[in-house]
Image 1: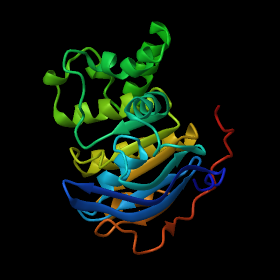
Image 2: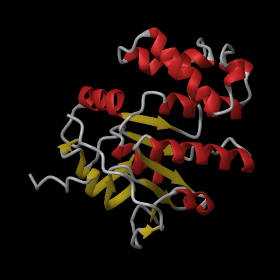
Image 3: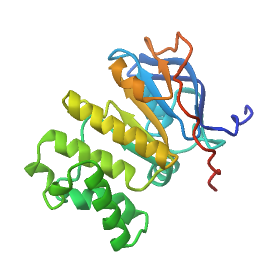
Length: 243
């Protein structure tokens, strides 16, 4: 087994390969994500962005290569280990809200906190706070079927942020939103990551949205043909490693 990644890389992957039904999606991709960084993964549709986020977030096992989180190997974990990692350390927002239809917006946002053992008052207090930040507090007592798609997406973002995970993965999270709402949600998502010292990995096919990131990595046909591009921003404060 190779050496563990650098201490300041909360996520690190080397030579990862992944195929879907025999079709290559990632071709020996290597990437490092620093603690507290906002990283944008850009590329056209079908370039491998979603697959890369799936492998980094332990949703998909890699076919070959290595994935590390906090200097611990992810690529050797079985299904139960990957599920535990996602539940305890990661937050995820996709292009579809995927809310629990039987629950209200407030209950959806509080759910991951309750599952983690947080008390009801604290869990629902955090849910109310994040619904307010995402400008959907008025939807708190309504179920997904009563809401429009853009409202549901904001609730999904609130749900991902409420537990303050170590890493938030956002796969084209503003797809259901119009331009003004996209900018607002991206500002909230990135500012929340920086203010709470979270790491954010954002996949988008819209290069304009990458301006919210500290650095970008471009994917073309499952490869990273060009170096990552740094964006001039203040460095994030150092964060103590969790145990």
